[in-house]
Length: 137
Ligand SMILES: [Zn+2]
Ligand SMILES: [Zn+2]
Ligand SMILES: [Zn+2]
Image (cartoon, rainbow, N blue to C red; front, side, top):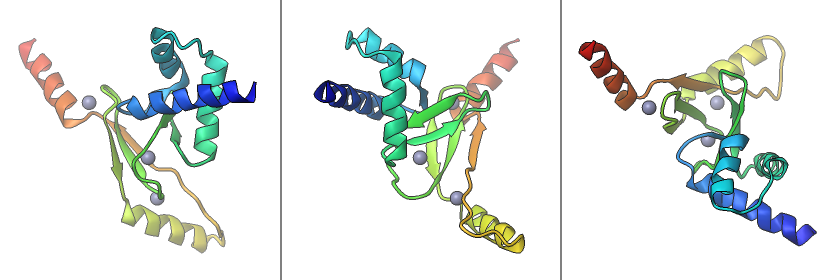
């Protein structure tokens, strides 16, 4: 049983690494289903939260409140720019944010402060495509 779980988890890890941007458990499950792996949605949820807890995957909430996951190349603390149309994800350092967060926390007497800052928008390609569409109307 334990071995089987390890195999499934490994498969989820691979699928996550193959994904282009942040993905939900449901869309990853759909990919695995297409490949006839027989891995259930509950297993995908468990594997993803396990990978996130161990720092092997980044997780965040979409503006819709959905939990999204990605196997990022950066292992240290970083932020993301995410295209809400195509899912393109850029890992960014945000030195200003780090300083602002630390100072704001300190000025209220907070220690061990953590923060989550991710920017959702339309990438350059999607913006250009949208402008083309608008011009065509
Ligand atoms: Zn990341
Ligand atoms: Zn895009
Ligand atoms: Zn930060």
